[in-house]
Image 1 (cartoon, protein in one colour):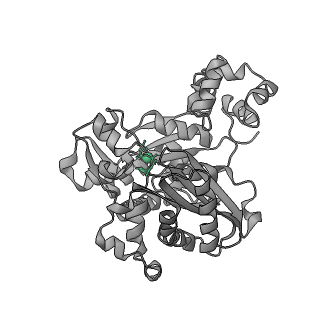
Image 2 (cartoon, rainbow, N blue to C red):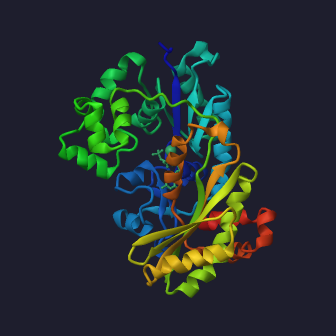
Image 3 (tube, rainbow, N blue to C red):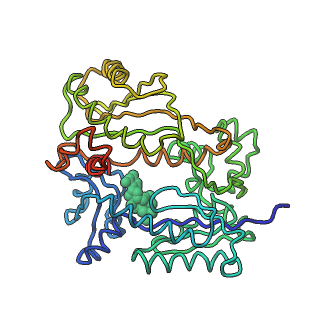
Length: 399
Ligand code: DCP
Ligand code: MG
């Protein structure tokens, strides 16, 4: 039998909002959100726990958030600041192990099974990380400690904010038995309500079904459900990450009335995409190009084509095709590429966490272009991509 692993999942509490409160102490105790303006179809990126009391959450329209809490203070994101804090946090992690799988700016898995710190006590390592993050970055971070990633992630959420929760190997069985199925990664609203109809509310209910029954009900997810319901998750902490796609999207504060206006937006979107792709240069090859259109009535469509490079002509064609499916005003446009790692062998069997990350990043809110300051507008030139000024663009459009 393999020795039990020690996995820590670290996740900062209301990350962007914590940084804003840290830097503006007069905000302490008040409900705040970080996101776009309610007058420009902005979206909440996150909010502090005071605001969560009003039912506000990430990805909610800022206008709805303001309705739920008229005193809500909405702050525009400052990505530079969050990136800097993120680098400091990840630096703290790296003092305790080399086996780190970063999931986002504020979140990572650490495998400390072989760490020499604190005589290998994962609990003491986690406490030291929390203390150092508080000391160096002046925000709180919650941690979960467990023998695998799935349980560590649930555990970090268990006592949030500023919390710690440990699931020791001996406790796994009891912990999982009582766990509501909606806590399982991959069980979204649709699967959860299907399970409810079947009388499955906890992992203990799931365990009553055998693998075949689970596969009959839930397809290829059935086998994983069977493992999770027994507390089994053998996924390693992966220090190499692969991306399957890169994309950017923009929500417009007033609808784009026709195809011509959509095509006019294409160069701006391409600049942002190019900036993201530049970071991945040499690691991936482009497999496909795709576009996304969300019409004013929220009906959305994506169109893709096989291509090994990005090209305005291709994107124009895709926009024409996508637009013709609705022929109505457009509220959101997106551009992207699907990728293949150049050194594929290195990544074999390492794809699941990436889809996790991608689904998360696609939920990120966009801020309308009309909210750009004139300074930001100046960053809209291909030249500026190379001298770094396009960061302002990203901040304004894609925070
Ligand atoms: N984020 C975003 N859009 C989303 C979700 C998150 O822009 N739909 C950003 C803002 C968050 C940060 O990513 O501060 C980290 O995301 P988390 O899911 O970890 O959320 P928080 O750290 O804000 O809150 P929690 O305390 O629940 O972890
Ligand atoms: Mg967080």
